[in-house]
Length: 309
Ligand code: NAP
Image (tube, rainbow, N blue to C red; front, side, top):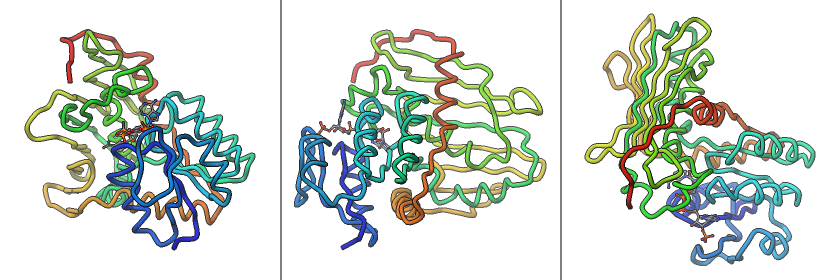
């Protein structure tokens, strides 16, 4: 049984698919409870909300907050104030400022706050970053196209304010590029397409510049892709071409496959969380969230046909 006693808060798809097995597979952690209005994990004590969890499980060390971003701030603040280490699913919050508040609270309490970006733990990402270090980037092209009906069936929250719409998957691409590129980029224009009956976009086109010039990077996020799904990042440099495929699991350099890995993102997240807790450090990188905020700020809004699940 691991020494870090952790509870999952918000037991839905990602908690069941990834957090429960990753905690079970990590010798540093023991899943001792859950808090969720409906969701439960078999064999694990469950509570309806975080307050009753904290009241009843006195020797809890950490919580993994797996609910949608909207209600995450309040749960995170409650946990930090109670002196618990906190893991935030992505996106870490519904606004940039609320996550800044959490960073300050974690520092005050001397506990670890980990804003996870699971795509950064995909098998090809670390090697992509190493390969790009020191190179001159000519252009970056991101294509993140998937079928919302397949990946988010019936998730009403994702279409509501604070639910991010197509930026829920798109922010994963932004978490990778902000990690691997050797220079910062900033958004210069965006086009967001909103279904007439929804509060969040179903597609987005983004253009980024860097300090050396405009149009350095571009991205298409689209939730209307049926058939094969696309999660690709292509980086053209002064010394070769890099392609991350399948959300970062595969890495090709000049057309040759150099990494072809399976899905180990969440195992990596829990190794990192244990490391942060041992060092009493936090890891909160808000660059992907800022790019999304910028897109909502300067993006041109267009309305497209209504979307029904
Ligand atoms: P989900 O299936 O809807 O589960 C989230 C759970 O949070 C719900 O089942 C619900 O459980 C609880 N919850 C608490 N407050 C809620 C509220 N106001 N509205 C809706 N649910 C609420 O969502 P998910 O796919 O697991 O995604 C959760 C987070 O993980 C999101 O930030 C998402 O971006 C991230 N994520 C998801 C995936 C994926 O493939 N699905 C992958 C990576 C990351 P109770 O009803 O029991 O309270």
